[in-house]
Image (cartoon, rainbow, N blue to C red; front, side, top):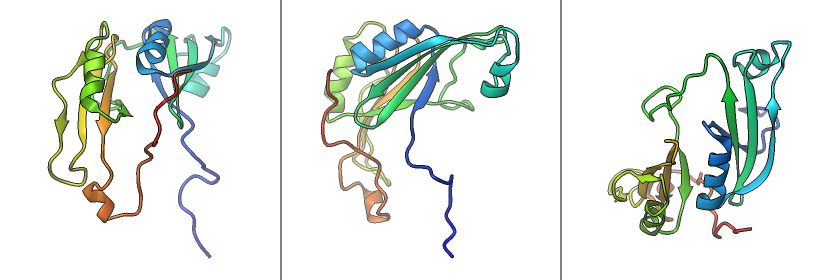
Length: 182
């Protein structure tokens, strides 16, 4: 008998989600600057008389959320939340903090993409793009940037033939076509 590992029936990652301070600003940024497509908005999501928000989302019972779902490229869905809650922390975690995070976008030319972002109001590119010269992802060119509200993101290009490919048949997904612009 073959023992399967992992969640039974799992087929794909459906979405990644981030909480943002201003939903309209974030949707505009992802649509206009990044090139995402807005799928829907929803809300307010709340439970005025019960504890549904605590039981289902592990937030304060009186929290209120507004939600947007966006499509980024051929396989990634991005869900954005804007919460209002009495116990809300308003500091973004650094990558080194528990819960730290960043969203990486594969691009064909990291330098051109970084130049594009430098020209966008409120976007801060963190230094110049670098190329990794050793290790399993040698050849990877990358640079981090911050959205106007401080969310960490990355531009990345790992060319085919990276050293890790000699050790495993597993490959990260990389599209061979650009995102459509509506």
